[in-house]
Image (cartoon, rainbow, N blue to C red):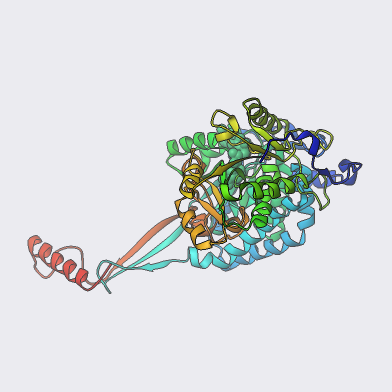
Length: 536
Ligand code: NAD
């Protein structure tokens, strides 16, 4: 693929005369009802700034350390009652939540678009993910949480069962990029397992998270079961970690390491869903149209501000030129814009900070010799923090965007000659969150997937196939995290296992006048016999 500069071939604007600010105004009475759900008494407020137009959407009261203390007090009280409710009752509430989320989907998407600046089709993923998560845990609660009989040491005489006991109050610290689903999806299995939650969503997107809390109340969950506080991560986040019985964190690897240390100090468990530098592999037998379409979604969903989005692409030599022609053409045809309507293929970045990072990465790469095949410009004419979808070629290890997460709409494309080399390069660096492999031979693609050190690998899809399959665990290897959301692991992490054994007749001590030595021999012979009989 030859080098060309981006400026001349800017992607199309959906409607250049469209004024997004005119199309929607947040109902301030609703904003006050939402912020009234917070435990926050400092008297200070922080504006939630919309990336659509840089204007405040509402003012969010800020919490103090005493508010966090009060949130935990209420949550603990609610948890004691909640732990006595039946799984059937909890499941019914989860299915009600599922219905409410689907019914109020438009309103949820409006709020997300308005508060995060993302395109409506990317906002759509959020209520959908919550509906799928609520349904999955409603339908599998029994399977995961019911008491299980396990083999006792002496068949028939030792009856052992394992209970799943809730941890207590779970602290949830979540980011801004998927502000509705990230605020809710990890707390749902926590409450299904009998815990209460104290949550601190990111300060930039509190209203979307609070809308989620309103829906939980509408579904019938006890009001105090899920507390929400607001404030800076460093202070309010730390106050949560100091009181929680378990912490679920989603955010950057740097913050995740700090939180892991704080949890270790208190000997509490934590799960950490962190960053990535995710690779996509296009093998020589790939369906190139399908791969080009998937690569656009892989790199530019939510303007690349997605933990599982792709920032590196390795394309087989044999198909490189043909694939790149298709891919770049699709990127150039993307419809860019902000606002509430359908039809945009990519929306804005969340903030000036995020824009600065992306500009920094691209300018650094350009200055060191990378070629910008399309994109490469901020677009303040669309909205304050907008950046074009950008494709780079010739990225080298000395460039920041080679190994660092850009968390923006920037993908570097590389050629590969043989597949082992592609796998080795996909495994470079310290991250290990998500990968994608495009090939018509899905058996071979699955074999390659096993060699990639990532928590999820999608074949012939970008990220949705694993992420939306709620029964499959989702999370990162290496610096991309610890623990998993979704599936059995996603709920069992919020429980302690408790083994209860009832011993009948035979005691674990000499009987019938045996000496200690005779008892030891008897036990040894019994164990050897049971091994012969195939006992585990
Ligand atoms: P961040 O780590 O700066 O902030 C995330 C959350 O942690 C926010 O609520 C913040 O207030 C809080 N926080 C910050 N410092 C804290 C501290 N010292 N103690 C306690 N809480 C603290 O992350 P970010 O940059 O806002 O989010 C983007 C990052 O999140 C990216 O790296 C992205 O890959 C990652 N992410 C990962 C997943 C996943 O599932 N693996 C999902 C979404 C985002």
